[in-house]
Length: 417
Image: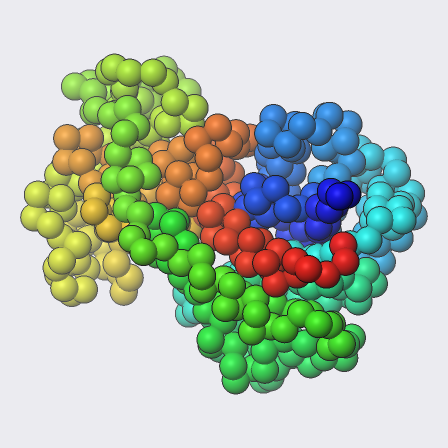
């Protein structure tokens, strides 16, 4: 009996590879192309394809395309403009530059397209902090590039992942969810109707991720497909776990990082904490948290201030800094609960992710953030520390992605590949 070929996919807005990693980890899929425009993320994903998924460096460079998805025609067909060649040419394979995704994929069938456009324009927090409520943000319309690529390659299904804020976003005075529904309907694809999409919101903690992270999962299939949307969502429900994973499960066994008696200052950087025993773990290095931070963390943890009222937390911030804020600035993660949502703001500071061990008096490390996103311990992140926090915070949790991939494979199995 002939072995079935793997399902093939294109990953758009691929970031550092959380969604791709989940799909590849099922053993059911092969990634034909992964498109991302930020260099640290591109380098990270290329390294993962080499280290874990047995691609050569040349093949990884060819498949992970550094490019702006908004330039959709060039991405699909190649023949990049002089501007595109100047911006991205040196970091991409010549085949992709000249012939685009069409040249890279050749005669192979694209079974699925996956991805999630940047979510800042849809997030409720982002809209609240924008003077215009993000109404004029170009990222509101990045889904249009996703739609164009689906329309060109006609996959058997697509996965469109985003924040639940997408369901209430309304740039141009028309709800985004209606725009998305109409765009896919126009090219012959079925998704849940706008009023039904609230049923497509899932939490990553239900799928073995040690983190509360809600996301809307929009699945689309051709209108004439034998695959039914409900069969996917029912299959996804079957992957829910009986018991949640906690912060302790994810990071409890990592080496402890204790505060130094005296800060070490090399002139280029300050070191406030060090590991005193055990094997070194890649990227498990604390950011600088000086004496004021350590005093703050000790008081916060010793008084269990997570349980305090919003007003009490604001007063604490004022006491510490002398400033006032309408937003809560501090929070610790808790050993025996899933983590709050890991966010890209970690690139700026970690005060909303204070480590729960009162003896360590620090915020979480890059490796801890990655483990809370369910990235494997051997996943290498390349880039500056802020960029590593950013790419991890923006990623799809790997175990969540794996459940989505398995559910879709289950829905498709039995048909021709």
